[in-house]
Length: 326
Image 1 (cartoon, rainbow, N blue to C red):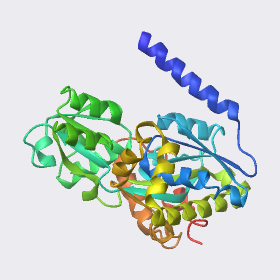
Image 2: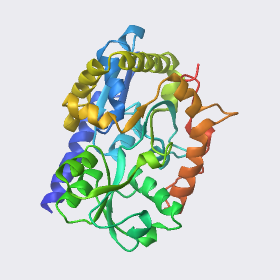
Image 3: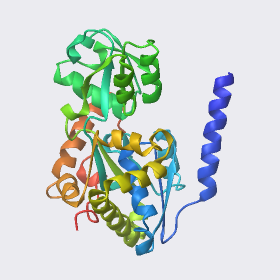
Image 4: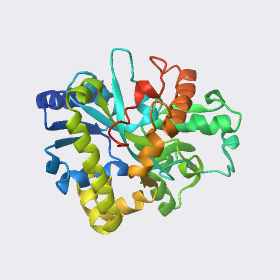
């Protein structure tokens, strides 16, 4: 009961903090996100004044629970969320409209499966206990790995916990297998405790982060959405030319376990930041959905099998590429 009350108070505190901020108005945008290296360019654009240059004030809020973020978005206390495309699919409903307007990054080695034994492939995980966060990107990605081997989620025993807790349980030898992400993969390597069986570089295009905004916000504030995209692209260009300086700014902005520029740089090795050409290729259009259309189809298959979807989804229901592909 002690832990339950503590968790309840924590949720109430976060919810109250979000509610106090209220909804955004013209020239303001609030985006919730968890701690992840791929969201760094949003802080870079903010701190270099790129958003402000076009009259936009972006409020970035770290909330380490995806469901809390989406609850705040649904309630109008946040304008949007930075998360993976597959993750947000679970929340889209006929009475909760939001669309991805910008692609941020792709995990390319930043997510992985840690093992402690002699496993040589995913097939060798059959019947074993796997620590992972159910309903998250980790489960989505791991389900894809299983399917590639002709397996299903029923072939393993899932110990449901956050990605951070899964890594901690693995390092403490309380879980033989863990699905997690950076910096935990690098930490396991440094401590020489287990190894990475497979990482997301083996499945390109499956874990992609986007900024998704409420449909009513997009309709009422198109100039602000355009300013967000423009500022983000400027930040990506700056990062390409001034990587060390950019990483220092982003590390300070994102904070948490990425507050050290060196740690941020190490984590950045596992992602591909999306520039404009990559956005064009990924987001596509209504007529030509691009890679996002394929990912939405894949997400629909995985989440439907796991009973997580609230409605049938396609490119038109989840993507607004108008701003990012101009």
